[in-house]
Amino acid sequence: MTTCTPKLIDWSQEFSVGIPSIDSQHQRLVELINDLHAAMMSGKGSQVLGKTLDGMIAYTITHFTYEEKLMRQTGFPGLEAHCAEHGKLLETAKKLQADHREGKVAISLDTMNFLKQWLRGHIAGSDRLYGPHLVQAGIR
Image (tube, rainbow, N blue to C red; front, top):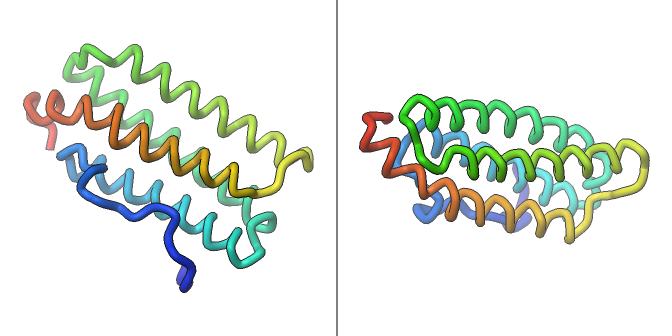
């Protein structure tokens, strides 16, 4: 989405896990959140919330599956905790999606802040913990 609206999240090296395929997927998640933010700021948030949530959830499931496969493949010791964190996010996102479908929630700054904080915390925190392990195991 091309817009003059400031981005909610700017991609930076603080998000890099050192694996280009995963960094690319993380950049796509940032784009999806920024698209939703731009729509909200232009007054179109409620019109695109459902579609964007659907897309984010589908992409997130694909991304989590990819990450978890690599962690399993390389014997990452934090796999169980990381999978639990993924499960919590998906549960929250699916609840937001269901509430939106039932007309209980519209896009809001609280929703955007939740997505921003989760993405920043998860990628810059949890995901960076597995990066060195995967790189050492030969994942590029």
